[in-house]
Length: 129
Length: 129
DNA sequence: CTCTCTGCAAAACATTTGCAGTCGG
DNA sequence: CCGACTGCAAATGTTTTGCAGAGAG
Image 1: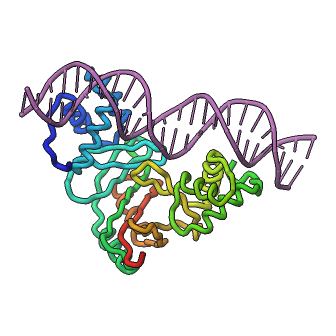
Image 2 (image 1 turned 30 degrees about the vertical axis):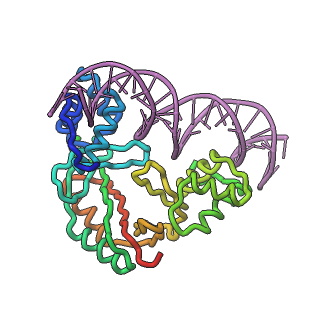
Image 3 (image 1 turned 45 degrees about the vertical axis):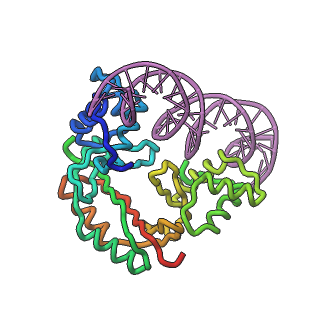
């Protein structure tokens, strides 16, 4: 059920288009709203379904903030990376942290943990809004 | 509203007791269920209210997983730290990562970000369940 | 044609809130 | 006593799902 063939429908393309045009993380609700303004009448349920499919295919990243709303963003690179997100304007920069990766692995191994993975997000206020 | 005096009620003590007895992260729902089994009839709303109060007072940590359920855990130390969580048994180890802290600050500054904060959680499979 | 995908509305959840009554200090 | 705290139920907000119909291949 991972890469089962997926149809190229109008609404799927519309969702991907919005993601493409958005450099920052966007919530499903916001994405849906944007589609409506753009004239594309895509159902909210479809937006969720499409988003979940994309996440499953590892084509988008998910970010869970404390407000209970999940944010989605198209992955620029398929490889593992982190994000530097502006608290105010939402601008996002993809960052790599080689040192962090190995540190996490090391610490985990030290405690007898294997199959290590991790999540790391950096937040801040950017100067040029 | 931060450290406004807080009353020591039976239900508050019950919630803290469960947290005390739980070394791992636990969801509000699970905590509530555990209270019920224990005979303490504490309302779910009260559990949430108490948990939020504790978070506000920085006495517990919050962790948002991808299942949309927030997990809570009593802080061992008041200072900033991260967690190494076992995917299978939920065992949690508090870890410190001085290098990560400074790295995050540096990278953020490099991109013109200030007021930097971050979240970092490490997951893995621990050998001794 | 067939079988997946979509829309809509209802359902399912987690969490919050309004309010009257309770109880700690 | 007084006001903060609680319980319950209703309200909220997000995400999921059931089902009949639409459209891609």
